[in-house]
Length: 115
Image 1 (cartoon, rainbow, N blue to C red):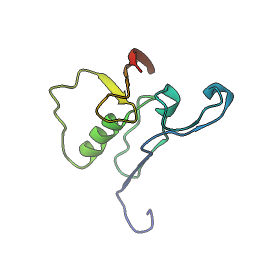
Image 2: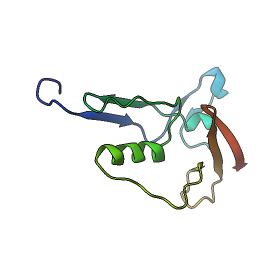
Image 3: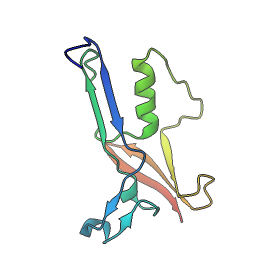
Image 4: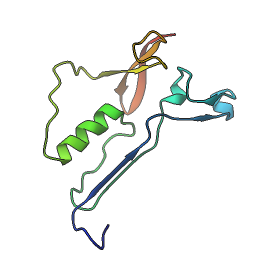
């Protein structure tokens, strides 16, 4: 990229995490359980021109999409954005439960869990 383009940005993130049976995951495997371990996904951001410094330890897909839109010259103006977010269980309609959270002091603060 550096050889063929002067200005570029790379965003990389996964759509879900994967538990691999580690002790801090209580020996769980997979990505279909509604637990916090399934919500942590890798996020890689590299910029050769924008020089934006990431200011948080955690980002979610919504915040990443807002950053990407900004880099493309757009602004997402969501009147429902109040700083709290949801992770749905395996059924997107919410009937499989959800996790409700917010970011506080660079940590994730659970608000409510419904299983």
